[in-house]
Image (tube, rainbow, N blue to C red; front, side, top):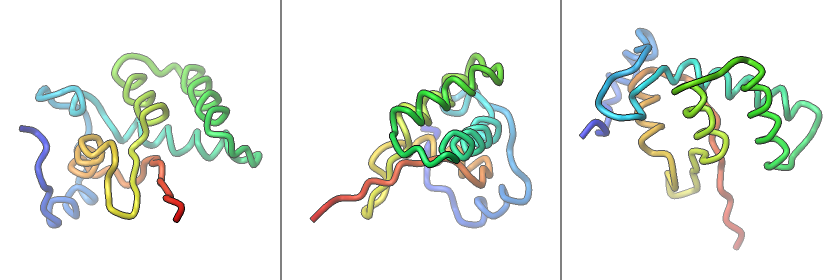
Length: 121
């Protein structure tokens, strides 16, 4: 199994010596999350800079901008996964996206986009 707990020392090491590119164990390890996450963070800032808060509008604008950037193949699919099937976290931890988050941490990705779920009550 390619997902496992990543020791703190390894996460710190990957911050200094990031792992780029992919591995062949699974789809999640198949590309460079540094590229995809960096683009997602940048585009999220750009498309929401006008104050738009509608999730559907933001998602649509991000996908249009990613297409204009020429994103294709694995990078396109990974980007799409962050936009349409986001890593969800709530007060108890991960709700969705644990495998992607684990892969990114192992590679030393410093920033990505997530959806924070707030429960009323």
